Image (cartoon, rainbow, N blue to C red):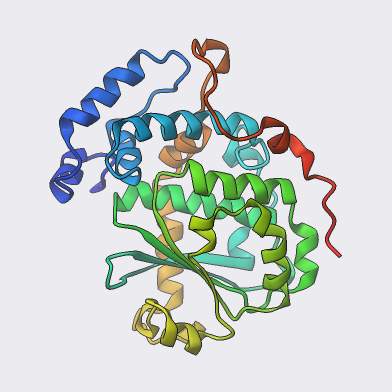
Length: 300
């Protein structure tokens, strides 16, 4: 595989700010943390990059990333590939594609949209989307950041019945505190009543840094005119002007998911062994909240 996972030296060459001596220091530190799982050199590079090359911040996010999975079984269930998605085919109802395009700031652009709204399930789609994002970090390596376009066309208020507020809350925490990539933009294209209601639900769980990069667009053309996402980035089937057919982009992502299945599985499953932790938990999140204080939140 020609990727960062199998060729970390290419990642060092791509980003001179990733200092090998710092990565080796992190590996030495981790070897003394009995509660941590095995972490590859490449994974250390992902965490180090997303924290702005800070050794202490990298240690903190690594600890949160792997321990958080113990608190969020809805998002990281055991035996992920065999249980969570066994009876649900995400790709029949929706899809996620790497557009292969970057913004002027060199941010990668990822698009997600619907194929059959009647089969779409919010919770299970979030799990599949997480799997895609882990695959992309494995295959593509580090980059200055990611811009996500979520096409709301076809989404309706009825889809809220397939959304667990607990899973959404935990997912937002993971994105903001523990994911080894930089989120630079979330564009909600063809925004509608579903998105308005979803924002009401999400807002209590959003930090200002993420809230400030969420943009609502009533249609694709307005997004193209007012954002760093340009029409040539997206397939013609969704209103863009890309010369690459949507079906080809979907096939590539699905092929890569198959190729990297074992590696993604390992990344999804790895977590701390809390019985072996020798220091106090330094996390800032409220365990009681994560375990369901918001489960009774109702959607009118």
